[in-house]
Image (cartoon, rainbow, N blue to C red; front, side, top):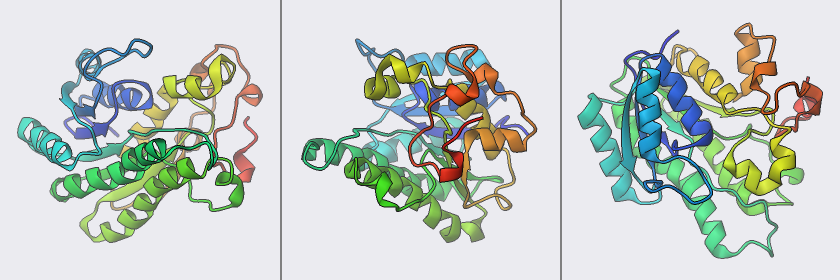
Length: 282
């Protein structure tokens, strides 16, 4: 089960979960195109597309940094073309880029609404639209979207309807593509964390308190590698949870993923959008 020689097109992978997926694939010897906006260092956030590409190279893969705003159709077309020109094709699309604002209706301005839906739902669809013709030529093509299991209960919409619409829009792409492209052998799956993940985004939302109750992005990188190594014609249309993927692969000890070493599982914070049976961790 290896991604050696495979080419991944990852959106928003300059830091966080996308970066972890990229580096894990690189450890297998994969080619990874990082399509993201961060070309210059952010004053408060570490990582650019160029530092991510360097990390990919150090891990044993080949990195390609591409400045790309996935809301812009021409930029996406150019980024996909550059990846194919450089590596000869695309085997895997990882829809990682996402924007978040956990605000209610009256507190959500339309600029923020448009940002979330433009990046999350529209950006995922747009990248799929231009990557899929190349995925059809791959021997084991996968689309992996970082989005939650579909669940339309009011509890997941009432507190932050704009974000939920945008995030579930990504999941609807998984639902549709798994069926639409089944005959082409393209797997479409989603991956979602059981716990909050220690990224810059979670710090902005919940501060240091939630960060200390999180797992590192490495758990998502390891789970993604397992999914993307599966036969695409046999594993599609699934909404996967990170530690369940690893547990199915025989992992029983998750302590190494704790953002604060020694934190017991039952003290970790569950993420949003989980089925009731997964709210409890450990």
